[in-house]
Image (cartoon, rainbow, N blue to C red):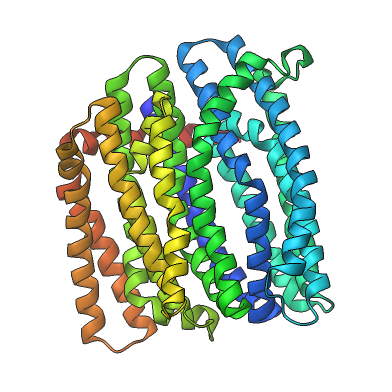
Length: 514
């Protein structure tokens, strides 16, 4: 298969996994909310926010390592990939140990003296935090191995591990509803066990199939490579910090001012929008190594073409689920959760809108990372995201309700997205009008036509499951048809036709041999 067809196959595989995860996640979230109750569900969400604060550097380092893997592969330097892997692994082991040693006492202090913990649940909160730290440690160690799968474009195999984790989490959610005891602690232990098991399988599998993952201690602590990884990650740290402060800082801010029940509504909103965004992020994961590899090969034209397609197709994939959800959110939440926590529907709509705006320029983010000159870019855009928390705090101090934090999300993501357009012009000489013509206008056309049809249907019909089905069917059909007719150009239609055809042919050939 050609690289283009592998890209399509990877996208299909991750999209199927994401739809599967979304469907099971809807059921499992309902069971967990019912089993834990709104207070403990919100408590689990806010304690999880502390874990993400402690480990946010991990995500930044992961992107840096994967970038150098894919770039070296694009240059055809296999031995260099092995050296980059060992350097990255040595960094992640050390970072994991340091972050846990520092983060453990900080997290314990925050839970005891900062967060608003319901009476009688302080001990449970501490144990959930400690249990979650174990999964965070293993997750940090596994990052270079996961990065190798990504750089090798073995996205379909990673989708299988994702499906396995979803099935296990779904089973755990059902078990929690059938047992007694402190369900919050049992749930934390179960989720940690599942994550550790999957990550260990990935580590063992990568070590056995990729010779680049062979551990060579003489390649550890190669300071010239570590310096490059740290330099790239250091500037990415600003953007990562901005995103972490926005998402997890908001959870803590809501906890301090409104308590764990509002955290439950915010947590549900993040699950809904996160599951929807996963459909687009899956495609981005398939595009990312190909974009970096193209840059490593010196094929700047192909790299930028893929980045623009990632902008457009990533947004359209989110629209497929976001538009019917935005229209029917209240009914969906009642159907799903029976009694959703306060403000959940408003939180969901605002955060979904944030993801939609972000996807309009997410391909450009990949292009800048592949290019490598990210210092000023990250300083500018990371600074924009950092503003989310003070703006949200100001809204709350002015007396606005809890969902006003979602407005802060939208304000700063608009600043960040337009900033990407400006920076891609400065760094890679891509005209601003090209983004308007190839991404923004086509996506707005798709969104407006599909939304108008969906809103019209919901206006003339009474709220019911049948109306939900009609809105979903009409909006999905409209998005696909309008996207095909107006958003995609001739080359993109041919690309998808041939790619999908070859991908299914490949699957058909593989099936008898299994």
